[in-house]
Structure formats: structure tokens, C-alpha cells
Amino acid sequence: MTKTRSLAVGAAVLAALMLPVAPAQAATPASPAVSYSNTLISQRADAQIYKHTDGYYYFTATAPEYDRIILRRATSIQGLATAPETVIWTKHASGAMANHIWAPEIHFIDGKWYVYFAAGDSADQWKIRMYVLESSAANPVTGGWTEKGQIATPMDSFALDATTFVVNGTRYLSWAQKDPAIATNSNVYIAKLANPWTISGTPARLTVPTYAWETVGYKVNEGPAVIQHGGKVFMTFSAAATDSNYCLGLLTASASSDLTNPASWAKTATPVFTSNAATSQYGPGHNQFTTSEDGKSDILVYHDRGYKDITGDPLNDPNRRTRVQKLYWNSDGTPNFGIPVADGTTPVRLSSYNYPDRYIRHWEYRARLDADVANLADSQFRTVTGLAGSGTVSLESANFPGYYLHSRSNGEVWVEKNDGTTAFKDSASFYQRAGLADAAGVSYESYSLPGRYVRHYDYLLQVQAVSTTVAKADATFYQQ
Image 1 (spheres, rainbow, N blue to C red):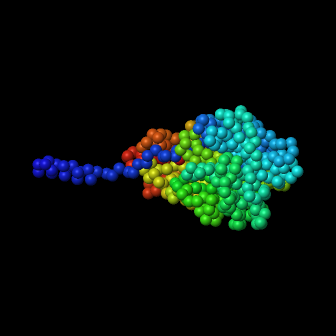
Image 2 (image 1 turned 30 degrees about the vertical axis):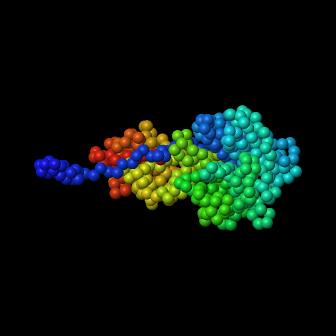
Image 3 (image 1 turned 120 degrees about the vertical axis):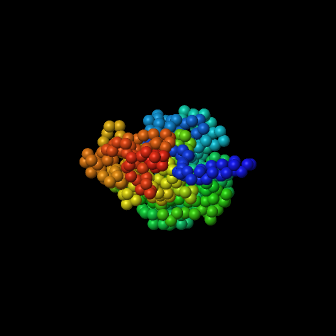
């Protein structure tokens, strides 16, 4: 290389180093926002939504009459709300399987459909045991079903809520059962399966209700459900009485551990999903998991009630209803359930285009960007019809319904309560535009200050004019 050329190259490198550094840029999120409307299905408890390879979602749940097993199917989760419902099995007239038909689950195993459910006896409605149905039909809604009988366990005692899952090629059954030797109503167990209706080996007891939140009204651990993520196996379970105290706890194990060894599992000391008075959701529990239509988001399926006070036995109240919302994941790979969201459209999170690990959230009502928002609902907002109308949107706080993102007169963005004034409605309304830095994202132009957008500056949200590349990046967000 000649001396002249060397000097030229050196000058070019120096000039490049002196150019402004472009802001970090996020790729389109791996798990984009989903939108569902709650309540999904009224008077259906213990719900399960199973996504099959045939392009359909299959729905089953406990009917409040406790007398039958129902199925629906649709090509979308929301479509299940209006899908026809078919009775695939009805309780026996007498004897076993003649009472308290509870908590059905449908699974596709080795080319056949199986439904797990619990049932009582005509002579004793509390003699509840677990049973299995089988169908070889392609469409289980219209196909015939064969009774495979009771799932036998070493203890002949109250048993229910069977679920099945596969970890590293091994199929397991988990369920809830009463141990007559200890003073609890039910505990959670696990065993390997020899076939879909037969356990193999000695079951292991994974959790016993001991914490105060597990023992309100009744000492209950029940309704196990499993989701896997990042080399971990997470098992939710429901605890306490089936009123507003009902809630979810969580067990965690390594996917490479011996799942039939209780020592492999750790239990949270506090519940992970509870009643929320602000959103008017009470007794959330008996959940399951499914995935979104695009396969990119995990979806939490559960039931709750829209009121706290119940007259008489909660089991006789028919108004537990099926609900769905997105399940999020913390940066350490653990699930973040957030709160049971308000009725209506499910909320989203808004991540920064140029700081992809940070989300819009409120902190002491000031809107800002933060990473690792442990209180998930602080970073969730519902996109609703704009308070000012005129084709606008407003962003309503998930955990403070009636509070909205809005700009104060100095341009600062806060989360504050709608006071009903025209000034507030105007300042809390925005035109949702294609992202200024990436059309796959969104930007929010102020309704009351046209040409100004919501952007972050020093991690605080402002409404400002944007003209530079950096400002446009600051004003672009992804819905997650």
C-alpha cells in the first residue's frame, strides 16, 4: 500500500469514528402483541384451550350443572367465544361417573384424543376419582368416545384435576389428591405414564398447602398446569377456597432433573396470580396454557368471577367464566403473570425502538422507560377508543382503570385519572401512526398538539416535536 493511500484510508477511518453513533435498534419483537376480549366464555370454569396441529383450538371446561363434558373448536382463540358447543359425554345415571363432572382436559396422544376428567358417585358425590375417555376420530367434536375407565392411584381417595405433559420425551401425569394420613383437602402429585390412562411407578407428592394463602377456607393445592421455558419446567397450581381467595402458586424445576423427585421442585412463598379489586376480577385460578395464533406468545387461560361476595357455597355459584391474557417472561426466564386484567380488550406493553429492553411504564404516576418491570401491570396499557374521538386512541393503565397516559401543559407525560374535562380528554388522545423509525412499530401523535409525538428523553416520556433521526427513534415503540 502506498503512503498516500495509507493516509487516505486513515483519514476515512478517523472521519467515520467522528460521525454520530446511531442509536441501538430493536428487531421486530419475537413476541408481538396479541388482542383478545374478555370475558371469553361465560359460566365455564376450569377451562382448557388446546392448540392442535390441524389448525384448530379445542376448548373444554366445567359446566356449572356438573353433568356433562363439552367441546368447542375454532381457528382462533377469540373464535371459541361464539363457536358451537357440543356435548361429547354425559354423566351416568347411577354409580360411578354419575355426579360432579369436573375439570375435563383434552389431549392428543399417539394419534388419538383423550379427555381426562373427574367424577363423583351417585351414592356419594364426594367420592371423586379421575377417569379417561378415548377417541380415534380426526375431529373429536363429532367423533365417538370410549370410556377407558378410572386412573388408578395407590391411594383410593378424593382425586381430580388430571393433566398430562411431556418433558424430554417422557410423558407425565399430574393431579390433585387427598392423603387421608394428613390434614389437607388436596395435594399435587406427579407420576410417569405407562399409557394415557395408566400411571407407572410410585407417585411423588410435589406440594402440600402450608402457607396462609394456600389454606384460606380449605387447605387446597389443586389444578396443576405445566409450561416449559428456557430449560425450566413451571407448574402452576390453584390454592385455597374457590371464592375470592382462590389464587395461583408456582413450582419450578429444571427440565433435566428428576421430575418425580420432590426435591427437584421449588415453590414460591407467595402466590403469583391473585384477585384484583381495581380490575374487578376475583378468585383467578384453575389455569392452563396455550399459544397465540402466530405461535409467538404464551397465553394464560383461567377462570374467575366479576364480583367478590358470594351467597352460599362457592361451588354452587355458576358464574366462574373463562378468560385469556398474554403471559410474559422476565429477563431471568421466569414467568410474569401480572394481574387478572379488566374486562374488555387485553392490554399490551410498549417497548422502545432504540432501547429494546425498556418499556413504557408508570412510576408514581410519571410515565417513563424502564427495564425489568417486576410489577408487570405498571407497564401494560389498553388501547381504547380515544377520549376525544375523531379517530384517536387513548392508552388506559391496566392496573389503574380510568387512568390514562396524557400530556401536561409542560409536555410531560403522566398517568392520571380522567377528570371528564375536554382538556384532559384532548391531552389523553393520540393518533396512532406507523412508527416514525420503523413502520412495524407505532408512534403516537398528540391530538391536542398536532405534529408532536410521545417520545422518551432521559428515559422520561414527553410530548415533543420530532425531526431528527434520534428523536424519531425515541418516538417509536413496539406493541408486545
